[in-house]
Image (tube, rainbow, N blue to C red; front, top):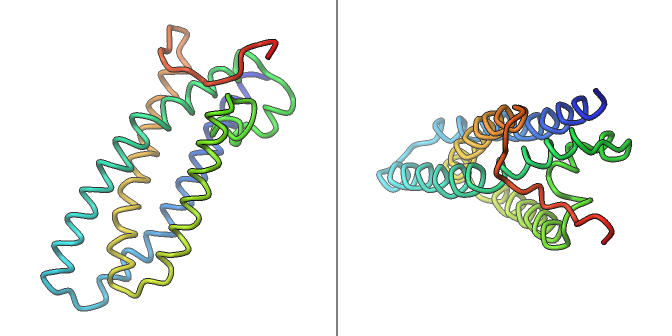
Length: 170
């Protein structure tokens, strides 16, 4: 029961974080269309949206983040501890009780995203909105893929993805 609550809290927390980011960026993406678009803007919009769908949505979320996050949630369900359950969204994202490589990658990726968010905030519209439109597409892809992988992980059968937790006794 406690492990199931931790799994739900972990996945729901990550989903809320992603949804919050998508909602915040959506308004910036929509605002871009209140500015005049040239052909360069339209071409850039198509390239960035398709590129972010592939790189962020498919490669980043569907092929890496979502299956691993769901695997960590499943691990939490079967190995509950009070700390991991209380901090379940952070546990599921690999910030702690993970292999050294996983923690380094998770923290580095987060810091990189923060730097990119700050840098993009200095870009004028409509370019900022064009970039944000691509990010929103990637985030929505990530939300859907995390939801689907989490349902698969919740099932009682074999889930073929590693939670990347340290080996016991290490």
